[in-house]
Image 1 (cartoon, helix red, strand yellow):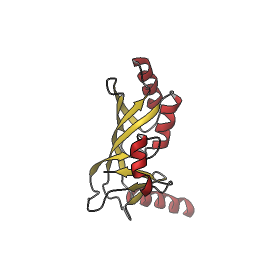
Image 2: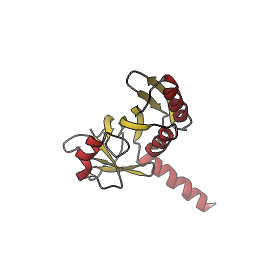
Image 3: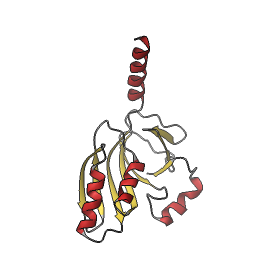
Length: 160
């Protein structure tokens, strides 16, 4: 019983300590050629438990995604769902709510993943901040190459 109480306390403390949350994202998918392609990708993404709503824009091959509050978001799972539909991510721009999040050395942990903010010098990471993921598989090759020197390979790189 004592062990259970300690476990519940540790969970409550860890949940309260890091309150970063993905709020929404714009996911541009390459390879979409018709509404059926878009629908297949949307249907695949909707199976993820952290997605609240998806609005497709067929003209720009873009999905505007709203995430559920207080539910961890996995970029890796999103990538796998897009790939399983037969397409790839061309660009991912997200809005994160940095409320009460401790960012040290321009990096932070969220839902088991490490995120590195590459150009945060002098910028306050508080409240909702728009970021672009510049890792391979989430950004065009030229963008990945530009930020490759700063990448450590183990973290998601974000640009404000």
